[in-house]
Amino acid sequence: MIDTPAPLDALEDPSSAMSRARAAEVERVVAIGSGIASARETLEIAEREDGVFVALGIHPHQAADDEPLEELTGLIDRRTVAIGEVGLDFYRDYAPHDDQRRVFADQLLLASELEKTVIVHSRAADDETAAMLEDFGGTVVLHCFSSPPLLPVALERGYYVSFAGNVTYPKAADLREAAGRVPRERILAETDCPYLAPQPVRGKTNEPAFVIHTLAALAETRGEDADELSRRIDENAAKAFGLQ
Ligand SMILES: [Zn+2]
Image (cartoon, rainbow, N blue to C red; front, side):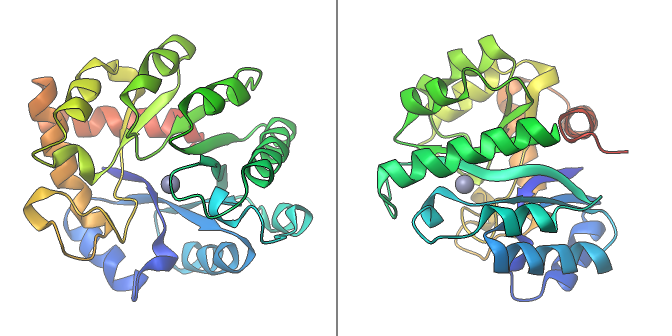
């Protein structure tokens, strides 16, 4: 099973979290580095931990922080499988919208040039996210999917849709309904740790091992066997991120 994505550098002890993940048969993680400092830390984790791939990007929350994109580009190495998180967040609104748009557009361009997959974060910005992605020709992963109105666009354009722990929450019937409509070859699962721990461990610090609970909820809502869905998600992730 693979967790796509998880910001491992946000955890206190990423190495023991990875040991617990392996014990839970979560052997692989796409770790997110958001901004230069986090990117460096994430690359170091990937260097010493087996099964860790890296996505590097400037998160919409950091869009006004003057994180130099050239420096980030310089960090991209063979373990870097995606540009992300990139996108728009008009819900938390930590950065002016114009900055968010500019940084998102620049990184879409970068991903096109490097032929990398993008991991997209979108909150309270469905229409604009869809519009900005319209001309992007590469592979798109919508992470921590929480916007059912964005689903028709995602399905039409063949985006990968990744579900986080919030799909397990009792009140999230609309998310489970959305999860049931994602084709088998496009579904992914993630922890997006350290927040949003799935239902049986809700309230704890989230970590990659817990993605199995999200898998169980997805399997149940889709009426599929969990082991089979886990294998399917591995295959989907391998394709989405070009993993060997
Ligand atoms: Zn996100």
